[in-house]
Length: 292
Image (cartoon, rainbow, N blue to C red; front, top):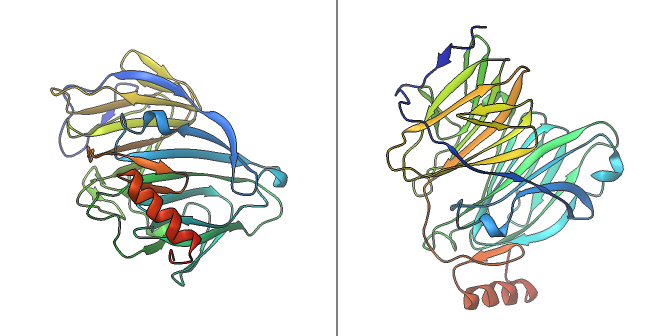
């Protein structure tokens, strides 16, 4: 593949964003001891508004994931789980149930609150994927909970020689994603590039954006983004998008962007509201059995 070949979306990118900083995730555990890497954590929430968290998980050792995430509550935001490999069963207090498999997405709107579990349905092999938390506007935080399973074959894609873009949310290259949201306007792309291939993606100048490389390496302007690194893209009122080029090996990366809510963020574990009083109410509702 000619390294100068650039696949551009319906609108050309003439002034790509630069990389503001690189972030290395921190190893941690959650649920009943599931080992993962927390890439986007609380210190970056305001900078990457409307996103609250990004976890990456991946292991072929059952002890790292087998206990899963037993019943736990959420209120005030959306969770997006993207499974690269493995099988995870979802059940929640609203009566929803689904099996997340290879390449599938689970998009859950916690809204005013529910209790759910995410438990592996495998005892061996690789389990790998991501969970992303997307904030809700203050006027939407107490909406009714909602849940959607999106199997791999229902995720729209754009393909070209050496390029595959899975459009989970938003739009790319004229392809509308599986999910659209009016306030946060999330863009969630899983981009696969052969060695040396590059792709352009327009981005609104006001949106916050970041890239997470999970295979290979990317070149973004003068910055090399290695595997398991997140690149926070600089805000520039004159910039119109991003240009990503794979290095010497096939590369896969998530490109994530959205419209900032510019509202206060008050978080206590699985509850994300706007004020301390709202958090206290959420905790009381949970303890009293009124949440979910």
